[in-house]
Every structure is written in structure tokens, then in C-alpha cells.
Length: 395
Ligand SMILES: [Zn+2]
Image (tube, rainbow, N blue to C red; front, side, top):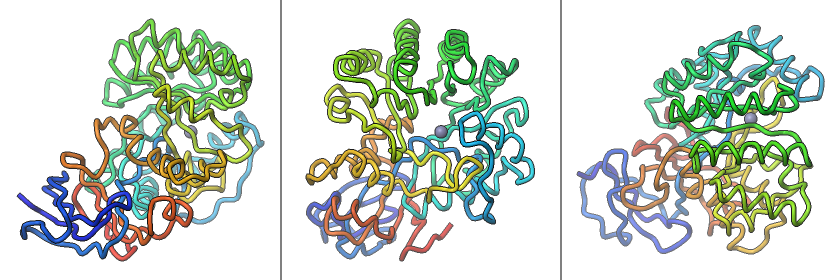
């Protein structure tokens, strides 16, 4: 049954088609003007159509979007930011469903319809952050889907009780558990990683580990992660976030690690920050190592930066790597959409029959033009529902 037809749109800048939706799915894609009438219709006006954006690394439990400005404070190190956040978050009511709803609405306005979010789990908030995120997703009627990574921001082994909380989170439905700097934060990388992998294997959940350490220390941590991924049979279920060291390593060392990461089916997510080493993205693509793009936290106690627009993150990725050719610029947009399907547990995420009906319409000539200008999202359809029309949020 047809519920909505988006007429006269150009998927990926190709020929004009009608996208026929049935509930939350794309039912068929037919030449423009040939869709059988039925259900509602929305005139796409010949606009460029892209799949909904996927934010593969976010912190929606503690972003502070739409709230009064909070001046940045704390020491400018990872440890300093963690301590600052612990000291201040309660004052701002973090975590809460209301602040998470605000940031998810902003994501939707930018066309993001699926998110993988790390959610803090620690001795202070317990699992309250996860509950707040679930409430926010429900408040938006499931328009934006959120995969939850239970995240031990404040450390694991140095905070006895956190491993149990991660186990509880996995038992309560978190699809992945996280980890953080097993050397720099816990100063006991083997213990942290053994603990995390034991839970992941026993509970059948994925792992997504923040690594900030550079150079050989970072490389050593990848090796520990690769060994455990292979031993636990968790190929395809493990991701490294940030992992700055990979871009810093030299030729043969880097190539050796890339081959082992590919063998272990370990993915990578990045926010393409300025002032970091470029990733060997061509080699990663050719080896089939997934790359996801994320916003990380936006406007939070860690950083005043970020607006939640994944298309702008893709532009940052293109700029960091000096991309110029159309096919490379299109690849950056694919990272923000189709190629990120596995980050949100989808087998397919594209403008094709059977995919979730997540569609973004923009006034752009083609995909590279959309990337360079990141124009307003004119229409956003999320799970078959129009959530943005004329650039205005409807939810
Ligand atoms: Zn993060």
C-alpha cells in the first residue's frame, strides 16, 4: 500500500524519479511521473535526493543544544575535561530526556535519521543516561533511530563497579558497550580490554572503543584489540573511535596494522577534526575497513564547537584529506550515508526498495555541489514521515 510518494526527485543527482513509500519503507523507485496515484504526494521539484544522514559517533545524552550558553572551563586535557564534566553536569540537569530531545531534533533538521550514540554509564549516573535517551527517542516517535553504546567515559578499572554497570546495560538492551583509553585513563590496558571483551562475548553485543593515544602507544592498543577480537570471534562487531594513532604511523607499520584491522573486521569512526593526521582512507576503503563519520558531542561541557550537521562533517573529512575529484567528494557523502549502514545495524541504507524511508531533499546540482555548500535541508523524511518541510522542523 502506498502511503506517500515523493515525486520528481533526483537520487544521488541522477535522473528524476518518483520514490514510492509504504509505511516506513521505500516500496519502489519509478521514472518521474509514472507512479500510480495513491496515498499522499509531495512534489520534490527536481531536487537532489540523498538517503538520511547517519551520525556514527555522537553523545546525545550530554550535548547542550538549544540551551543557554555555557562558557568552556576545565583543564584542556582529556582527564581535565572528564573531571570538569563530572563536577558540572548535575548543575545543568545532564542527562535528561529534554536536552537529548533538543539535540535529536536538531539532527533531524539537518537530515540525520540514524545515530550511534555513546551514552555515559558511571557510578554517578548509573544507567539514567540510557533511559533518558530512550525517552527522547520515544518523544520523537522513533523518527530518528538511536543505537546505544554504553560508554564508561570516566574509566573502567579505575572505577570499580563500572564493569558491572556495562554488563547491566548490555543485559538491558544496549547494542554495544564502549571503552576508553585503556592505557592513559585506566593505566591497565590488558585488564580493561579483557573485561570489555568478556562482556561483549558473553552478552553478544558489539564494542566501540574511544582511543585518543597517538603513535606507538595507540598502535599497541590496536594490537590488543585485534588479538581479542579474533580470539572472541567478534569480527565485524568491533569499532575504534577517533584512533588518532593510525594516521600518525609510518608506511610499513601503518600497512601492517591496516591488514590486521581488515582481518579482524574492525571499523573506524572519526569526526575528521582539524589538526589531526589524515587517515589512509583509500587503503581502508580498498581493504573494506568501514569508516563512519560522527559529530562527537556538540556544544557540551567538553567543547563549544559543533552544530550537529553530518554533511558538514563530511565536508571536513574532504577538506582534511584534500579531496577534489567528483568521485572522491561523492565518497565522502557516501561515508555520511550508505557506507555507514553497519553503524546503525542496517543491511542497506540507500534510496532503494526495501530500505527504511529516510530521504533528504536539497537544492543542489549534484552530490559534490551539495557537499561544498551544505545547503538547507528542504525536506527530510524519516521512517516514511515528513519531519522537515520547507526547511522547517515539524516534530
Ligand atoms: Zn566520543
